[in-house]
Length: 180
Image (cartoon, rainbow, N blue to C red; front, top):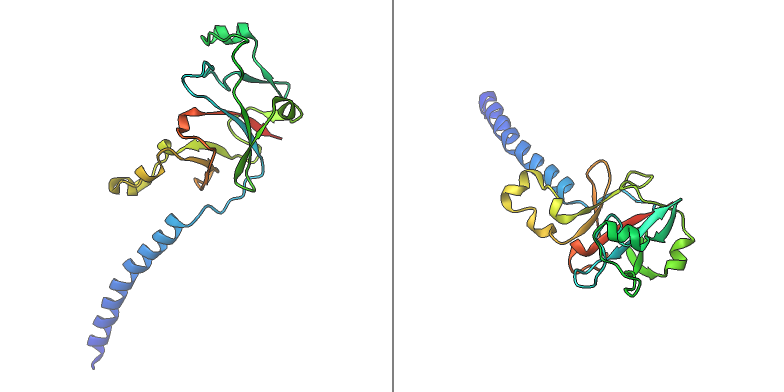
């Protein structure tokens, strides 16, 4: 085999290998699980449209001086809630980010915790609904559809970690705050 054929074969192999390696690289990084590890648990409640609860920021619950409280009837009615004391407030859940599970807790237990109601945790993690997920170029292949009705923890580098908050509909989820 002469030198020209060897050069042509080498160029052909390089031309075939580079796209395959690029596709493998994209596949590995696109479909690999999130590698970040959130540190802060959070509290949330669930709102069902026919139960008489309010949908305002945090719903019936508010954070005052880093403590969870039930908003006054006057405050709730200002938000258009038509709330009466006869309606029980929604249940409170604590999401354990390390164990990736949620537990029902009482208002008294929640009031013993220090809460930060900002949308970003101190380690810059946010909670995102699956319908807001942007699959980038994979959108043209319907990449967004499989994440609808899912909740995620998201860091500032776009890594996602799926979380199960026990919601039949993700729009029932009401974030209360991060436990600090």
